[in-house]
Image (cartoon, rainbow, N blue to C red):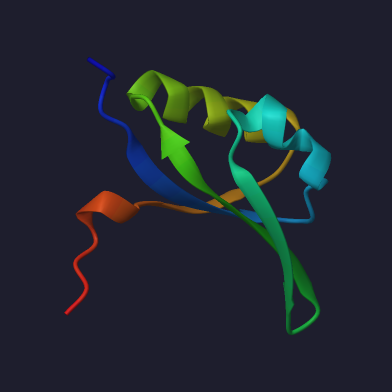
Length: 78
């Protein structure tokens, strides 16, 4: 039986190179610019809290400020 995976959206300050996706547990990377501020959104499934912690630690190691983390499975749409 495959372990359950939660889907996350992580917003970081700055521009991430999409080639870093593999280093960040395979999360998809989208770069945005809002009012002259570069931000990146990472979206994808992670196996557990340890995987989430690893992605956040990698972002901090790369000196990117984490602005928000949202578990998309917990967000209700009505």
